[in-house]
Amino acid sequence: MKLNLLVLLIAGSASLIIGSAPLFAQEKSEAVIKAVLSVQPIIETSSDKLWKLAEVSQQEVKSADFLATLLKEQGFKIISTGTAGIPTAFVAEWGSGTPKLGFLLEYDALPGLGNEPVSSKLARKDGVTSGHGCGHNFIGSSSLGAALALKKVMTEQKIPGTIRIYGCASEENQGAKVFMAREKLFNDLDCVLHCHPIDQAVVGNLRTAANNGLRVEFKGTTAHAGVSPWLGRSAVDAAEIFTHSVNMMREHLEPTARVHYVFEQAGVAPNVVPDYSKVWIVIRDKNRKNVNKTTEWVKQAAEGAALATQTKAESMIYFGVHDLLPNTPLAENMQTHLEKIGVPQWSAEEQQFAKDLQKSFNVDQKGMATKVAPLQKEPTLGGGTDVGDVSWNVPTMGITMPSIPVGLGLHTWAATASHGMSIGKKAAVNMAKVMAATGYDIMTNQKLREAAKADFDRRTEGKPYLSPIPDEIKQPYGLPDFLVKDGGDEIFTGLNKK
Image (cartoon, rainbow, N blue to C red; front, top):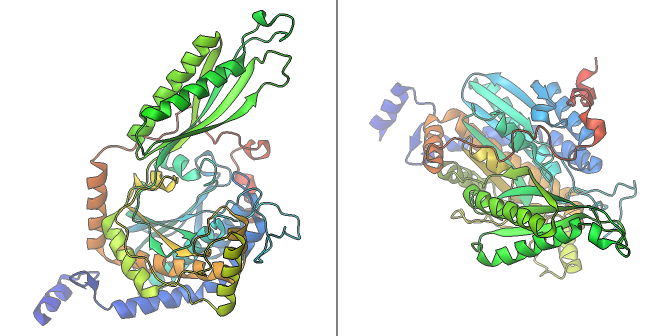
């Protein structure tokens, strides 16, 4: 054993390993955890700031400005703002050369989920009606904290490399990561790390669904519905035939497929033959191949409905995401750190807060999770994430931490409440610890990076990444006018202060 260690030392190995266990793991872990604790005030302050701002997708002006300004103050260089056509997206960087590690920040809230940080449904006193029901205030602050802690350790230990932070705006609505991936902004990285709060402590060794978002418009001819309806051609009739066709289609799709829609416009008065209708439809499945196949079928259904009603159909794919690719070496490494760090230590008051929320939702009053889940065997979930497109460009792995009571869902007022008090902040700090520790291994262990890359190459089979967003779509659909003026640089007011 001593001889083997001597050989490794002579070889100048960056990370000495015996089997899969890092040598000097205890010393390394202590240095990383100490660094995270040193930036804990920044993590908690950032969490609070983003929670109070609660800006919804595509409108996170103050949130993006706050994070970018904070990063600049912490020694990061702002590479771009208004990135990839998204006014509230940005990229920041510290260090130089290789290895290169990316962290993903999110900071958009959800409409209608504003709530005081209390265990009952209570509107915010300041009148803000949106809320961080999905915990993106922690995705912003945890990833930020992990990056700052890793920067501190790398500086102290003179570890070479680059840390890059992506301000990933609008995850809940046409996420910036897909637009960034289309511009190849992740391609020079060795790995990317991300996080998400939920009700369990789990390494994100899983798959999520791919999806496409379409807007289908029908254009007909208006007429008096009572006097001369034969002169008109109803766009609403076309929309109804179209959605009926989609409903019949469901019977013949694979069990992994999901198709759902709403009518965005369907006439204005019953005594006028409507000449315009619009259907918003989302197609999901386990991979891009299946999604694309169903998308073509949906387009054919739209054309058929138009033929049947003598109207015209126009189908526009405005957004889409890839399925999320796991990465076994990164997942196993992160699981080791998660098991060491564990879940936060909850106080009696916090557990009672959780049980009160569970009671409100008629869920078993188990309180907060207290154990780490075992490494998942790559289950497939029905939801989608724009992290999927990152994972098709670079080895990617994520961590979750309990920030809501067991059995409660995200996208609820209860989640907003949890994310505005101590439960959420504890989750944010622990996620930062796991990401910082994993990031340290990535930056110092070439074998880990090589294994992650080999796993990535095996899963992608050497196939090039193809963006689900059509070339003609330059920016997200429906961007507010006040953000579209010039690409968004001037919204980052904090970066321009002297």
